[in-house]
Length: 258
Image 1: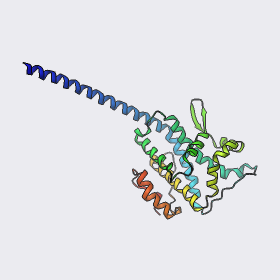
Image 2 (image 1 turned 90 degrees about the horizontal axis):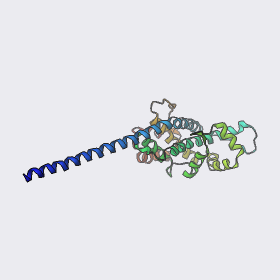
Image 3 (image 1 turned 135 degrees about the vertical axis):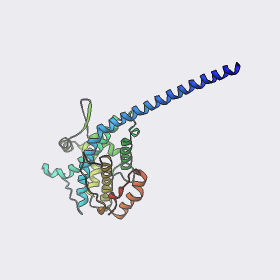
Image 4 (image 1 turned 180 degrees about the vertical axis):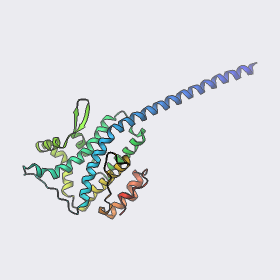
């Protein structure tokens, strides 16, 4: 009889434990699913504007890559708006890209973007672009420039238009000060070191576009510019950048193979 009571008690305890374990497992599954869905919704909301900003920037960088000498006029004394376009255009496209990233960061403070597969890949690209040997400016400068171009409109955050940027850039010494390190890089764009830094940076953004928009529903499908990279730059992409940071890419040859 004692044995029967012991067996019944054991069954009740073990059964209760199983129920609790199943309940915990289900709750954890729901929690993770909800986090993933939240991350997915946030990535989907911001992916299109990020891709469009990326696409515009890659188009400009490909134009730079296609020319052995790229002429960017410096216009400290000119009052003609057309003289301001060559420099402000590329400043804006780079700033716009950083701004779109900052808006996503600001709206994802309490969301783990890495809990969704697309968000995880996106974060890998951003980590790559912000790494010491890839980034074209210090990370704090990049983020500061990105935040500078953010404007609040009601409950929404948006990036300045090009017109807004040029107007502010002309009138605001503080804005010009933020962009001065980037201008210094662009002034030396025809020197091998700075040119290669910019083109390698652009190659990573190009890979981001092809990975996150593989059917090019939002972006244009463009060929790479590996033939404009030095041997050192190609080897760095081939043997360090893609294997270390972007190992999920199955065919990165396009960005470093001549």
